[in-house]
Amino acid sequence: MRLRALDRRRAHARPPVSEIAGLRLDPFRREVFRDGRYVALTRKQFAVLEVLVAAEGGVVSAEELLERAWDENADPFTNAVRITVSALRKRLGEPWLIATVPGVGYRIDTGGTRE
Amino acid sequence: MVLVNRRPGLSARLKLTISYAGFLLLAGALLLAVVWVFLLRYVPDNQQGLLGVAPNQRVLLRVFVPPAAAALAFLLVFGVLGGWILAGRMLAPLTRIADAARMASDESLSHRIRMEGRKDEFRELADVFDTMLEQLESHVAEQQRFAANASHELRTPLAISQTLLDVARNDPARDQRELIERLHTVNTRAIDLTEALLLLSRGDRGFTSEPVELSLIAEEAAETLLSLAEKRRITLDVTGEATQTVGSAALIRRMVTNLVQNGIVHNLPAGGTVTVHTESQHDASVLRVENTGHPVPAELVPTLTEAFQRGTERIRTDEHAGVGLGLAIVHSIVRAHDGILDLRPRAGGGLLVTVRLPGHLS
Ligand SMILES: Nc1ncnc2c1ncn2[C@@H]1O[C@H](COP(=O)(O)OP(=O)(O)O)[C@@H](O)[C@H]1O
Ligand SMILES: [Mg+2]
Image (cartoon, rainbow over all chains, first blue to last red; front, side):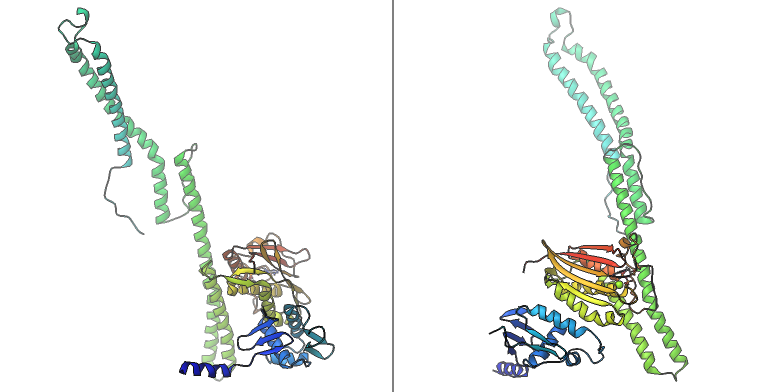
């Protein structure tokens, strides 16, 4: 009995699993599935995807990604965001899930080609 | 040294001599027995003898036995003497080999038998022994060189720490934070070095194998090293496809990190590129790390994977200029994974490193 209670409490402490556009992101186990298929990601790729998923399809600027997925002393002129996003996009496969909004940032493409 | 305590026994020379003489005697006795059986059968055993002219058996025996015994005695002496000399000559090479072995275990590995003469079993043994001594000697020399280099490199950060501490003791008013910061840097370097040495000395195997995806590891390595690359204004690219191999993810990560870091550090002062590429080829997983840089002399390339071997342009002040263990570690990791490491200089300068690992069907 006590074990089960502990289990329930621990389950509550876990951040919730998010699902968007066929994507399933489990922040606790750091796992991502697309259409049921496991996708292996690097640490930064996962962190970036987490921020994008949390925005629920809204646009996230490169500066914000840099601030939230990298540490505070990251070089503001780094290409890290661009490189990581393009690698992440490739890893998630087609149809492309992450859209670039020129001059503004990135967002998860929830509609459009899918459905 | 372990000396097996054996009970004393006959020497091989004595044994051989005894068997020579023994065989000789046996052959002589056999011959006599044949003569006895086949010849004496036709000699009558009565008073007249054969047709009344020839001697009978008793006479024949009396006349024949003494010279036969003398001949046998001579054969015995001849067999013992000849056997002793012959066995001595045959066994002489063994004595030399034993001497060389004793010398190798007591003092120097540099002694060689170098037996002359045509090829036979003993000469062959001597040659094999010489080859073995040669390999042992070079192996031991390499170990000594490694230990000397390792202790020298380890002493450097310790000596720097000592100096820093001395300065701090003589001048207590100095800023402690700066001291701690510098001690921390020096200490980190010593730990890294020790870990690299441990990794190398642990050698091969001894890890649990799991499926490993190379392109993911390449991207991870690029992620951690991107800021270093950008600081040096070097473009770092990861291209290619996912490819599965099996092995230790931690070791393979270490291997890729070392290669990419080399590509960045041993590059042009600015404006260089490093490209990391992964792909499957037939049954193999291939990783290619290519970078621009100063020309690398072709004759230098094979030596780069030796421990503590550094290229020519070495700047001590550079915190990322390693001690020359990076490629040695890569080499030992590749070997442990049954892979092939290939280094070749690029035409315009820099290096192209190819690692081929056994593929894994996913
Ligand atoms: N990617 C590379 N491009 C050019 N030279 C290289 C490269 N990798 C290694 N080298 C040369 O090989 C030497 C040995 O490399 P390594 O074993 O990693 O030692 P370290 O990097 O600590 O000097 C380096 O000092 C350098 O001269
Ligand atoms: Mg190196």
